[in-house]
Every structure is written in structure tokens, then in C-alpha cells.
Image (cartoon, rainbow, N blue to C red; front, side):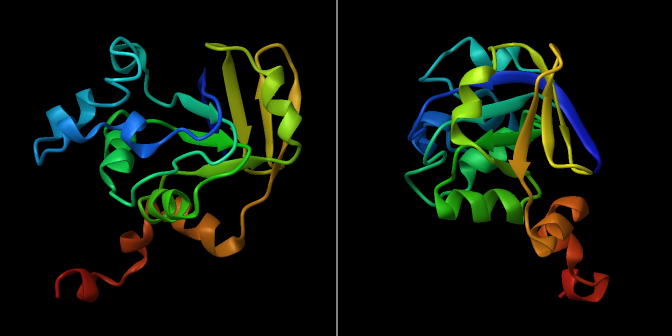
Length: 166
């Protein structure tokens, strides 16, 4: 996991988990969960997402409930990463435990420099986000254990096979 590239989708502060994935879309059916992503916020957005796209948010991204359905919906839609000013703590842990990278801007004001829909690349080698216009934005490096979880595709993938079978 060295580079993630996708289109930027911009959101504001305090994006709630019920906005990310509303309660009426909770299901064991992955199709229902996948299609529920942002369905109350913008019913057209989920269909416009492409594999690897990157969500860009403000302060307190993922506030609200601890339910993992919002993370599951993001993963089922193959969101590549989320970059925000900061994250609700439980959202960050749920995302990390499921292998979804959540990165923070080194400078909060840099979020305003990005345009909706532009292609951006995240480099884990130098902890930067680069836009298609050549703008390079520094990101705060994640800790080594968090990076290990992301690289493994989630916390459960770090368990030995014998523990997974138990």
C-alpha cells in the first residue's frame, strides 16, 4: 500500500454515521448496504462513486453511532481512503480495524484547496496528497501499528490462521 488514487468527494464538518449510511439501509444483504451509502444525503452519489475514490472531510468526520454499517458500506463501495481534518475516535478505530485508511491533514486549512471530483493521489511513502493540478498537501503520518493494520487489510488479517478458525 504505497499509493491510493481516486476522485475527491468533499464533505463538511461533523459528517454523521447516519448520514454516511442511514439506519433504514441496515441489512445483512451486501447489496442493500452498498446502495445505502449517502442515500439520504444525496441519492445519486453512490452510483457515481468509482473504485478507489477518496472522501475528504472536515472536523469530526464519522461522529455519531458506533455501528460498523457505515464502514461496511464504504468498503462495499470500494472507497480508497478518507482524508479529514480529524475523526470521531470510534469511527477511526472501526475504519482502521476494517482496513480503511483514515488520514488527517497536517494543516486543517489545506482541505479548502481541493476541488470536488478532481483526481488525487495519496502517497504513504512521503505522507502527502497530490491533486491533478500538482498541488501537494502534507498529511499527518499514522502510527506504525495503524499502518500495519491498514496494510494487512484489517485487524483480523493480523491474526494467525489458527486463531481465525477458533
